[in-house]
Amino acid sequence: MTEAFGLTDVGRKRQHNEDSMLVDASLGLFIVADGMGGHAAGEVASMRATEVVRQHMVSNRHLLKDLSTNTSQDARNAAQALMEVAIQRACADIFRMALADPTKRGMGTTFVCLAVSGNKGVIGHVGDSRIYLVRHGQCHRLTEDHTLVAAQLKAGTITKEQAATSQYRNVITRAVGIQESVQVDTLIVDLFPGDLFLLCSDGLHGYLDDDEVLPLVQGSQPSDLPKRFVDLANERGGKDNITAVVVKVSGEGTMEAETSEAQSRMEALRKIPLFRHLTYKEQTAVLSIATTRTFPAGREIVVEGQPGEELFVVIRGRVVIEKSGVEIAELRPGGHFGEMGLIDNAPRSATVRAVEPTRTMVISRSDLMGLMKRESILAVKMLWSFVQVLSDRLRATNSELSEARQELAVAQAIQPFAEE
Image (cartoon, rainbow, N blue to C red):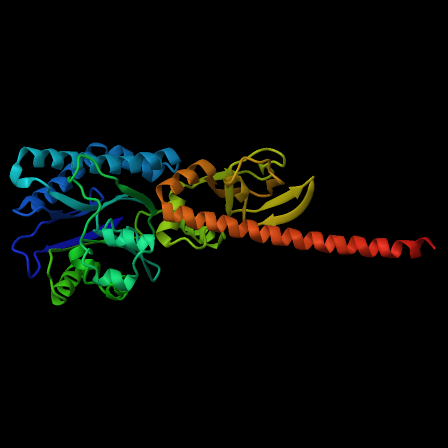
C-alpha cells in the first residue's frame, strides 16, 4: 500500500541532532519530531514522544484497522481520538520526566504523525513540523504551524512579507511536553494511488517555500527525495537539524471503487458554493465529517414538510425533486440538496426521490457545527458563504416577485378590454 523513506541530519550549525523520526511501512506509521530544551533534553523529548506514540498505536491497532473497513463517523472519531490520546500520553510522559530531572526542565518537542490504514490516513500535529500532500500535480499543506507568527498572520496583524523576517518566527505556541497536556490537531484524509506525503521539521521547511515542493518531487524517485531535501536545506544554510520523511501511496491493494468515490466526493464538494472558498485542508476536514448513504430506486431521501438537518450530495445515481407532487428538477452526480438544513431544522421545502440506485454524501448540521467550533477560520468562511448563498436566493426571489407583479399588472390593465 505504501513505501516510505526518511533521513535526518544534524545540519551545519548544531552540535547534535534533536530531531527524531519513525518510518514503519509495515505498521503504517510515520513520525517527525523536533525536540527542544538544550543539553540533549530536546533529543530525549523527541525520542520519547516517538516511542510513546508508537507503543500506543500498536496496542490499539484494531481501531486503525476498523477505519479501513468501517466508513461510519464513529470509526473516524475513534481513529482521531486514538491519535490524540497517543500524543497526549507522550505529552504527559515527557512533562513528568522533566519534573523529575532539573536538567531537563522545559524540554518538549514538535510532533507530526501520519498513520495509514487501508485507503485512509490519520494525521496528528502539534508545533511547527509539517505535512505536505502532493496529489494530481498539486501540492497542499495539511498542517498549520502553531507559532506566534502564524497566529499573527491569521489575525491579520502582520503581512506575509513581515512574517518572513519577523524575530518571532521560531516562537512555538504549542509543543508536546512543555505542559502536562496540549491541544492536538487531527485530520482524516482519503488516500489515492500516487499520493505522496512529505513530513518534515522546520529545519527543512524554513528553507523551502511551499511552491517549491512540487517541482522538487516531480521526476524524482521517492527513495531519493529525503536526501535531496536534506541537501537543499544544508546548501541554503543548514542552521537547524533537518528531517524529511516521504510516504508514497501505491495503487496495489487499493479498491478502485473506493478511490473513485473518494475522488468524486472531493470534486463534488469543491463545486458547492458553501465550500468553494475553503482551502484544500479545510475541504479535507469537511470530508472527514461526511458519511455516505445509499438509496434504492423509488426511495424518498427527504420529504416535503418534514424537518431535516443534513446536506446531501449525489455521488452516483439520479434523483428528482418534487414540489406538491410535481417534478420540478432532476439532479445527477455532483448535484446537491438540503443545504438549508445546515442552518436550522425547518421543514423541507420539497421531496427528493431516487429514481435509480443512488449513493449520496451526507453532512449533518451537528457535525459541521462541531468542526466550525474547532476551526475558527473555516467557520468565518462558512458563515460568509452562507450569507452569499442566502443573498443570491433573496435576489432571485425578489426578481421572480417583480416579474410576477409586472405580469399581474399587465393582466389587470388588459382585463377591462377583454370584458368589452
